[in-house]
Length: 104
Image 1 (spheres, helix red, strand yellow):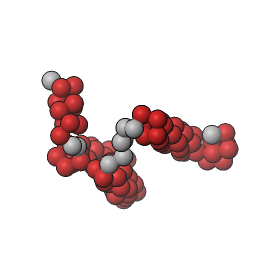
Image 2: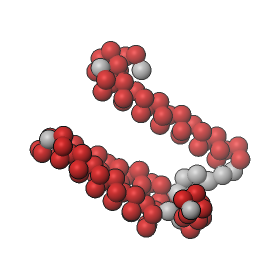
Image 3: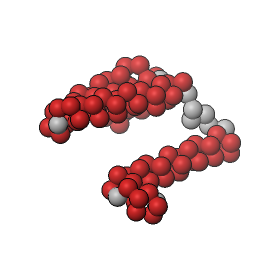
Image 4: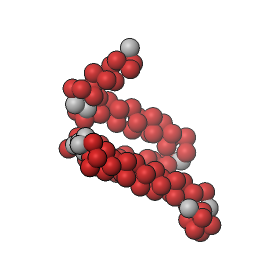
């Protein structure tokens, strides 16, 4: 974290934080899989992870071409579309039931 923060400033700090979250969560999922036999990895989760790449690219393109204000509007639509797609296609039936119970 120190190296990335010193080298790239706030962007490096954000990147280091994101990297630490990915490493931590991946380690926890591997432990759950090996120790308890839970299967936290699914095709839907892979699709959700891969879907973030075009979302991030769309946000970066909107910010660079149209500025921060329009980029924020695009971010609202991208996040809303991502949540809609997740609820419609990426969540399995037990996941949908858990989300419904949590929301209502």
